[in-house]
Length: 133
Image 1 (cartoon, rainbow, N blue to C red):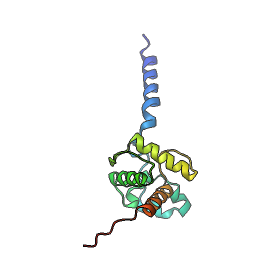
Image 2: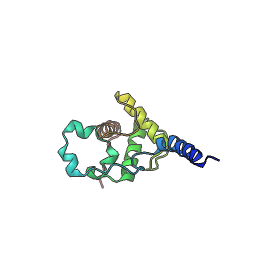
Image 3: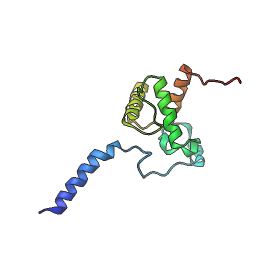
Image 4: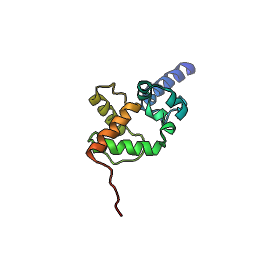
């Protein structure tokens, strides 16, 4: 009985099947960027940084980020799903489609520049409602 070989095969399959579905927000790894660190980057470097790793620096919380991203993608018709405020395969697919339309690599991980472009485009279509009470 080759336990070590079987364990290696199982571990390899788990990595191959599960790891690709884990988003940056779920995966332990790169430390979140601080506002000070983000401000030290030039504009092009900052725009090329994954937005999920800079949420605190941008004044965003994870659930708020996902909810705003879902709503923007819904407005632009990239996402056809009930918003959950959480990562999902549908959200990742919608982000990839948006990135492809921008002519960028469709990774499903939004960069800061892509996120701001997404917000700008969605607000052009559906401006914020002002309560005049």
